[in-house]
Amino acid sequence: MDKKELINSGKVKSVYNSTDDDKVIIEFRDDMTAGDGARKEVMANKGAYNAIISAKIFKVLEENGVETQFIELLEPNVMLAKKLEMIPIEVIVRNIATGSLVRKYPIADGTRLEPPIVQMDFKDDDYHDPMLNDSLIKALGIATQEEIEILTEKALKINEVLVKFFADAGIILVDFKVEFGKDMGGNILLGDEISPDGCRLWDSETLDMLDKELFRKGKDSEVMDAYVEVYNRIIPDSEKVI
Ligand code: 5GP
Image 1: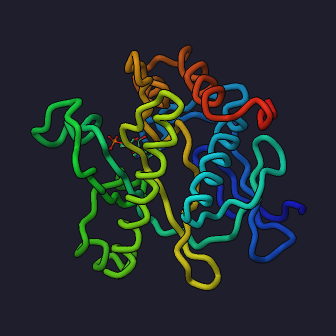
Image 2 (image 1 turned 180 degrees about the horizontal axis):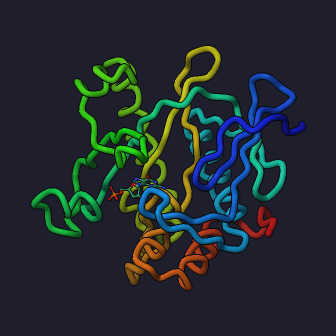
């Protein structure tokens, strides 16, 4: 499968058309960004760690009935995926209150959220990803009511599967962001990536952070060790390619 023209260059990934019309090639770069891209550093092998972690998680989700765009890894940091028309919504699921939730609302940091909160943000850096509600989503023409319900249901299913998957690796899934898109037949599939870039992951024993929050807090020298720790815990030795 060969790469054709670049169709989207995001903050950390580049998406290319492929020789097959309904497939894209996604290159996970070594860039790490924070603050809507205001701060950017290059971290060796970060793209490969995230691509391999995402591929593993997408496979686990597929085994549990969640359809994703993932097809296969072509190289450690290059993924072949079904082509989707992405929906510009960041669907966030929260199991424990922290981050922007406790900055914006009177909920104590660390509060367990039962049931989990499902939040939808408008994916647009120029507007700083503002939070949406159903009427806003419909007014913006981003999704229908039926699609909002599908996104919510899929996000909760992903949460249920991944809470258990990470718990088995000694990790608490605090919260995460996912993105969805439509395939050529109009089906809504999980797209983008699920990696320590878009999840809060805490060690179950020590509650140490194992995700991009370290970079957001300026602990640049610790962040890759955390990504490698997640990789080592969830990727069996037989599947390790770096
Ligand atoms: P918060 O809204 O508390 O900052 O983030 C909630 C969760 O969603 C965290 O796991 C965070 O990593 C993820 N998240 C929210 N917005 C973004 C974003 O624009 N990019 C990435 N990579 N993750 C995000």
